[in-house]
Image (cartoon, rainbow, N blue to C red):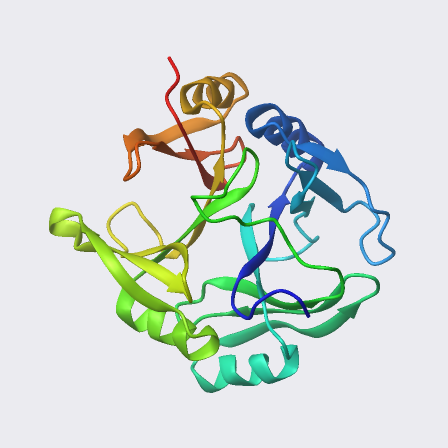
Amino acid sequence: MTDREGLPIWYELLARDPDAAERFYTHVLGWSVERPQLAAAPDYRVLAAPDGDGVAGLMAVPSGAPMAPGWLVYLAVDEVDATVERVTAAGGAVTMPATDIPDVGRIALVADPDGTPFYVMRGDDEGSRAFRSADTATAGHAVWNELTAPDQNAALAFYAGLFGWRHEGAMPMGELGDYKFVHSGTICLGATMNSFAGKRPGWQFYFMVDDVDAAAERLTGAGGRVIQGPDEIPGGSFSVVAADPEGAAFGFVGERRA
């Protein structure tokens, strides 16, 4: 495996209406769509950044599954089965046991002790470029991974035990506490924060855009909504917290060019 343990290597959107979701995200984030014709998921779609790198998958919410539309992340591991054992030993749960996907890799869907789902994966290809840190990101790529938890320190301890992540640096948010940055080696993956009224526990992912105001205009014009922002962030860019027409939360980051 060429992907380093614990790095985000893929993102996935579950939607009630994949055709409508495809139209929305290609318009708002500038992604293109490929259809790899996977035997295990014939309608699976790959969302690619303008530079051609695959970033995320898109599929329908499985029939009968007790899941709302939303985004998931795949985290790289060397040994899927061993990682699943560590997840359960640390108080997490297994939603889908380890499974081989031909020409893709071995994956399992698990959840942390707060019930937040994520995939672990050993990929078969040459390495993922879906996530890029803020200093190397280009339009369409994931650039930030944000975890909201009832206890951010306890949540990070779980992921640290699996992947060696650590808190390093923070931004005070008043009564909400600190927004604590998460690192894997020298790479800043994102941050954690404590949950608060109106903010449920879970992962939220941010994607890079060239112009945050133009993206916000496309968002609302296509039936999405701005939940918060644009807010200035360290480095001079701006972030927007958003929801798509089905209510799936996501975000985007970019400059204000107006």
